[in-house]
Length: 196
Length: 196
Image 1 (cartoon, each protein chain N blue to C red):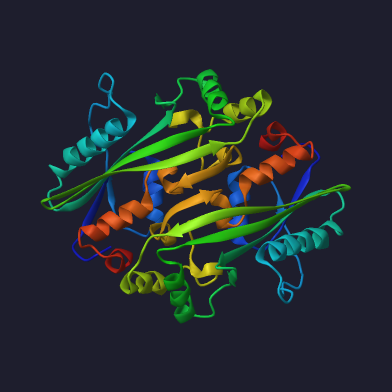
Image 2 (cartoon, chains in turn blue, brown; image 1 turned 180 degrees about the vertical axis):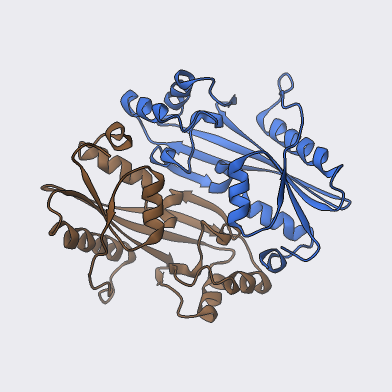
């Protein structure tokens, strides 16, 4: 942590907290209260960018001296946004729709620091290996994907389903770390100070 | 763990143990005792394939009833194999040689199960973002890469250096999990039983 920099993660996601912790950054987490409803016809990239901005702004207004980090991740198959499954049956349907094909994970990332705002969208392509219904059903039955968009966790047992990705792995987990590091650098907060 | 299947990880690597633990598989770890010296002129893919086979065979001979899993990972830049750095100064040199460029991580993966042997090599391309010397020096100073081939840990603070990968992320950590799952399936040990 750089001296005098108070880092606030505007997110309730335990995965994002774990990722930031692994970087060795000290931070506080604040859960943003925003309306996450998509607008009619809103494209996935526009949606995750807008929600990340709203999360960042809603927290920055109360945390004027902090570096505020906000993110919003969407899973997209054929331009359809896959949310969190309602139950295991819907989870199984999602896994079957993803198997043997490539989908995209997009994360909107927004930083607020004093008077400055930086916003970006990071995109990763994810390819599932072909799965028969028995394997898909076995994965869905683990329940691991129930609280996750797209009904899988790449960092857990879902690693057995993902044959290949193209882009930043951590973007799929929920926070594009390399982009985050580059944006923090753009704000003049150098890596050395953030690693102290 | 499938009933009656004893899984043995032929590896002393703490990262591989963590990955297999995250899958929820019960297993024992046995450290293989082999000579890891490359042969003169041996290509990286041949080397990691041969060492994985040797590790698997050396453990399988003593564990006749177990499913034995062995792996060997090499980091390759311009056909040169990057080993573990001898000190922080060599670590810094490696990070500077990787920054702004793409290298490859190859893992040989060998399974032994009763009379059957399966062997494969998984390849992932890893691209570092451009880094100035200050940032590279700051990363090397963390010491995180000291016990790792290529002098970085993609799963740690090194995540800030890697802008993109193409392939299986877990292959870069040291064990290609999706390939492992597929090979375990080839042996007739299905995912459901392995997730029990």
